[in-house]
Length: 62
Image (cartoon, rainbow, N blue to C red; front, side, top):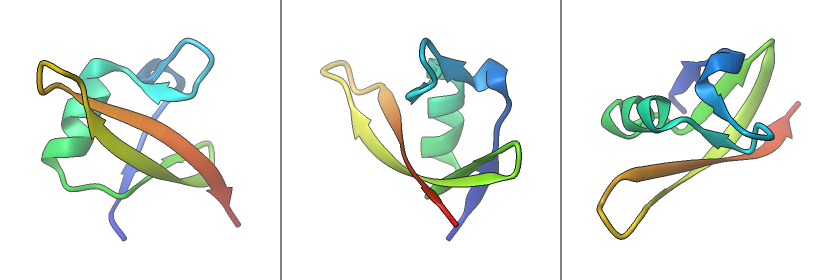
């Protein structure tokens, strides 16, 4: 498990996705989880039609 620490500035809209910049860092760093405010979350990495990474935040891990 490789964890990327994020802040609110790394989240889009309602907080379900990482921003494009944060998603690129996530994909390039081979991360599997993010940590925000002490909460650890598993993420799903996918790619859009242009090949840009999209990172959806999963459920919290306790």
